[in-house]
Length: 406
Image 1 (cartoon, one colour):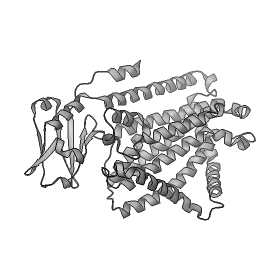
Image 2: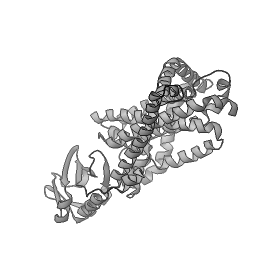
Image 3: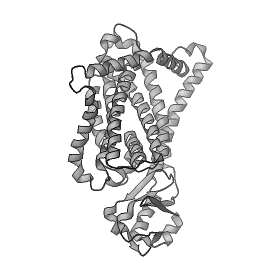
Image 4: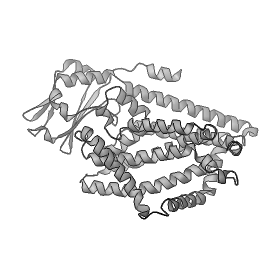
């Protein structure tokens, strides 16, 4: 009910911020909802005579880090023209801004996510309060007990996690002639295939398309491999699970460390590509780190949930494989979501698809030197932590019964 209220809560028409990137400089103007009804055109200073200096035209609403629409340069003549030393946006632009002012779907979806996170948090806090009030519940899988146990187990088994990851890494390339070089070649050749297939369609509208795709594939591959592995994690480790006690999340964390080491190798290729294609990197590149951190935490949370249910449901692995395949093409890996998809689908996917949020955030920071999607990253960090707790809670409550099932 609260989620429905958040989705239907009345929101007044928003002011719209128009931003134009011109040869490394940024020109912007805030147009209020009232001014949109009176204006017939919008003017910005512009010293050039051709459109080649204009890199991008974007629109923002309430959150200045959350882009809600863009005008592609292929449609520039439809929305604007150059008049002397001014860039003039016509009535089509104002019409578009009026629509963006009244359509507040991204804010509504964000509020729904906040309410959902609040409901989960309240449930956890109520359980923690009950655990605190009733001493008998302390060791009966309450939040306080489980969080302390998780922290203690993490310290206790950290050496095993690292050792297991290193052993798996060596086993992967034990009989290979190219050895660790495959960790660089695999994502690189995947990128080449996708660039050849999608490049003719999307490459014209996206600058540095090879880097655009490769940077997204690195992030997607980590998330996909972690979630895919988690489903059969316990079943594939039955020799360990049936003989000694190991917290089951340790098996998942070991695989995540393995994938992270391979990711670091692949990032070396990305650095080389940035140099070869002369992509200028600014201070906003540090915003890549929070995007990756939230993605890794969410991978663990989703992985823990699938780890638990994968023990009991054999068909889950097939279902997850299909869902990941669908998610791959709905995450903006091969295209820019804001421009390639029509509204409101682009806003819905960008709010409700966390992988799309992480990829868009990372790419804007790395390739465009912009800090974006700050509210979405914050909400998904909270949801990722809460999902991680739910996964840990399910596993701790049921892990003693896994041996009987497998």
